Image 1: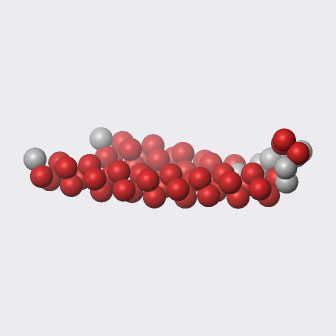
Image 2: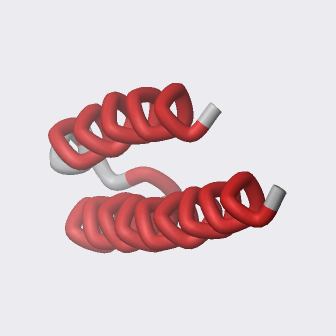
Length: 64
C-alpha cells in the first residue's frame, strides 16, 4: 500500500508542479502568480502529508 501511495503521489506531485505556471488569463480576476504559488504551496503540503502518512503506516505495520 505504501509503495502504491508513493508512486501515485510522485506522479501527481510532478504533474501539478510542472503545470502550475500554465495559466491563461486572470482567473477570478487574480494574478496568475497567485495561482501558481497556491498550487505549488498545496503541492508541498500534500507531499509533507503523504510522508507523515507513510511513516505512520510503516510504524503501524512494524508494530503488528
